[in-house]
Amino acid sequence: MRAETYVAIALEALVLNKARSALTMLGIIIGVFAVIVMIGLGQGSQAYVTNQVKGLGAGVLVVTPGNPKTQRGFGGGGLAGAQTLKLNDALALQGLPGVRFVSPQNFFQGLVSVGKTSVGAQVVGTSPNVQGVRGLRIAQGRFFTDAEWRTGAKVIVIGPSLARELFKETLALPLETRVRIGEQRFRVVGVLQGSTGAALGSTDDLGFIPTRAMQSLTDTGDRLVSILVKAEADELLPGLQDQLRQVLRTRHALRPGDDDDFKIQSQADILATVTVVTGAFTVL
Image 1 (tube, rainbow, N blue to C red):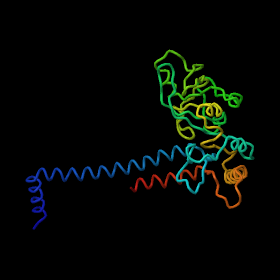
Image 2 (cartoon, rainbow, N blue to C red; image 1 turned 135 degrees about the horizontal axis):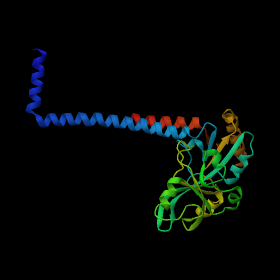
Image 3 (tube, rainbow, N blue to C red; image 1 turned 60 degrees about the horizontal axis):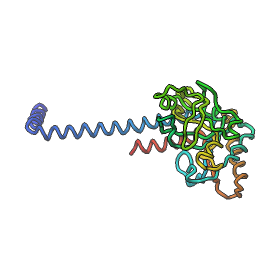
Image 4 (cartoon, rainbow, N blue to C red; image 1 turned 30 degrees about the vertical axis):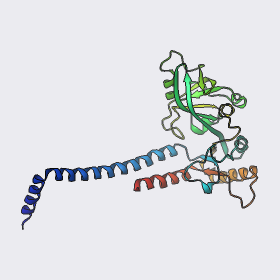
């Protein structure tokens, strides 16, 4: 039987069984489409997260609380988990040779309000050093000062997206306006520039307040979610990572043989974790 005969029989079968043929084709189309979409999602998410991590910069180390043997992936347990990092730990790391900036980190997720306008946002409790670590630039006003940080002044610096959302229905200007966070009022002293390509991802919808002001807002005491450490130069990172570990082990009274109760990660470590996780997602 010639090939033309096979084709004619196949076409006849398709015509005589229109519903079955349509359903078969639909199944094939949906299946192929689903595979393409899932692979695209996996590769796209990997590219996005990788670009965000690369924005961190090779000269930054991230210290998080908790035993690294019980942690999976990037980051630690936060305040809800391990509570082994304290503000004094961050202050002790600032004086180490090769350290350029140290930025303590705490977070509050909630409503930021002006008048009748409320916006869900993340507020970061940190020090003025975060400007150097995360590459923040001011569009209006200023960042809070060392004096305001030490005293826990109720001041806030907001990202441009958060500023637009808060003030789009009012004639008030952001600078010197009082915003409510929880039950407390904070004075806006600065608005950030847009953060395309900024270290650690976008800061457009974030707010930044002094660490001690965050302590009164969340009742977290001197516990920290993380500490960001920026080195003077990239080539100092391996030795600096060892220094940080020894200082923190001494401060936490860990004996030889005891596991660390903190985790120190570089950009390379985080990228390796991202590759494994997103690669598994793509395969799945």
